[in-house]
Length: 100
Image 1: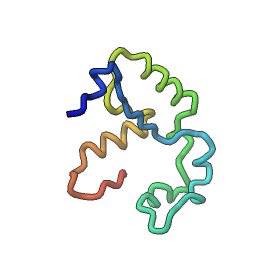
Image 2: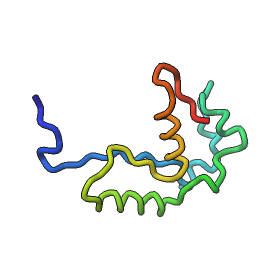
Image 3: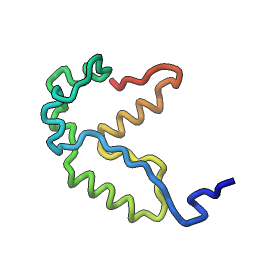
Image 4: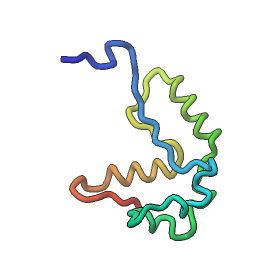
């Protein structure tokens, strides 16, 4: 049996950011794949700026995470990420998950 990371004093967390206004999502249609299952999410021309967090907000959340005495396994970063992860958790596991 391989010992877990806890015996070494190592905590692991998965930070899951939502859309970040880094410039990559400015023209989301440039990054679409054929038969993209998320195409309906971007039918309005991309992610609205009001739904995005700034790189500074994402960095601040990650900096706070590393300062915690105990970390959660998963940490949504930003309100969109929190919404999508909650929806995924509520979705059945026997069907494809497409966030709405």
